[in-house]
Image (tube, rainbow, N blue to C red; front, side, top):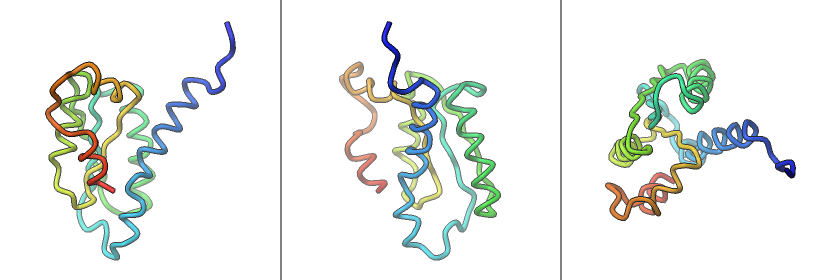
Amino acid sequence: MPQPLLSRRAFNLSAAAAATSIAVPALAQQGTWPSKPIRIIVPYTPGGFTDQMARLVQVGLQQRLGQPVIIDNKPGANSLIGVEALAKAPPDGSTFGVVIAAYAANTTLYPKLPYDPKKTWSASR
């Protein structure tokens, strides 16, 4: 069996780092950010890999930004529940989401999603 170019762990760490850096350009435009607690929606169960990665990011963000960072687990429906909550969150820069590669499969598995993936992610940038 051929060796993968990137281990699963390295891929997941890279994906988590990329997900947390999506909003960095938007944050640079506001001088008073963050003015309220930050919420990270994790659409998977507490204690899983994605939750643990979000909690590692949580510690660093709290220390660096001086604001509380709350992890909000919303598992179910292959991440649809959590991603829908993220899509409906106010676009004020205080709500972030963490997803894994399985999120990309939802557009092919579910013919009718409760959110528009193109609109949701492009509106947050």
